[in-house]
Image (cartoon, rainbow, N blue to C red; front, side, top):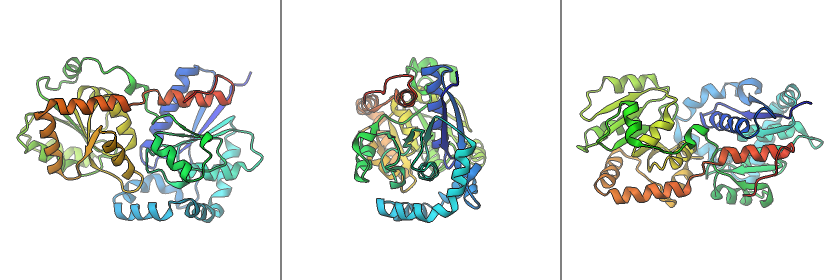
Amino acid sequence: MRKPHVLFLFSDTGGGHRSATEAIIEAIGLEFGDQMTTEMVDVFRDYAPVPFNKMPELYPYLVKAPQLWKAGFYISDGRKRAQVLASALRPYAARAARRLIENHPSDVIVGTHMVANFVSLWALGRGRKQPFITVVTDAVTTHALWFDHRADLILVPTEYARQRAITYAMPPHKVKVVGQPVSERYCSPIGDKRALRQKLGWPVDKPIVLLVGGGEGMGPLAKTAYAIDASGLDVALIAVAGRNTRLQAELETYSWHIPTRIYGFTRDMPDFMRAADVLVTKAGPGTIAEALIAGLPMILYARLPGQEDGNVTFVQKERVGVWAPRPARVVNTLRSWIENPALREQFVENCRRAARPEASRLIARFIGAQVGLCEEPQV
């Protein structure tokens, strides 16, 4: 008997789409074993016409012009504007999208990138038989292109995103709040911080500040690190430069006054988060979701204007962290939390309340329900 096959459409324009897709596929395996098969296709790199097929490579450079990126985001956002943009792209994308669908037959299609959703739904046409599920990977400021009424189900990370979907005329019964999909590695119990620090070779007798800038080491990470070092605070610093080898080399040659460990790209982030006391990070939705599960209060020091604007609002409203866009404000917040542990502990409790460690498995069960392997989850 043929197993149901699930096609995931994503793109490496930023790390979040890939990691969310991989987390869902992992959850499918945990929930259903080998009862389903899965496949990932990068819609830009593998199928988009020139020059759009270069978007994964161009993305890190595009976001280095944040105000231009912000303008593009908000100019194109809105239901009617998104429809105009989609119609303009259709002549360039429709043929490639049809080829994609023909080359990858499936029983369920899951889109984790907003562009993948509308071009694929065009290609499938009105007579499609496969259910189409959109998994929105932006947490709050979700662009209108995410919300196509032809999708069968829209799974969103937050109630804020659900309300935005309804504003964009999505039928409410199609929109479900499930949380941000993250790998199972982040969902283990926090455990013994002291033992984790000993295992990692970190100081066990000082507050640990974990400083990250996403997979590409984005944001003013170096300036923030130097400000923490010069602050006089009795802390240890863990700085993760990601794939930014130039940044890693700069940090490794700096003469630090506080205990400091420098890392490049690492697969140990779940342990890093469980062992740390404070996270200083850019406002990426995946990192925020992972920190919530670890009960790790966060200081947001940078954001990508547009889709990450709402993430700052979410962190502030839920009181799981603060917005501190300048190094001096990062240091002031650290000082406040270190001098007043009870205040930081309130943020810890708020993180645990807001966390959704079940998100990936919920999404897996929604997919499984489409092919009769389980009942649809009630959320």
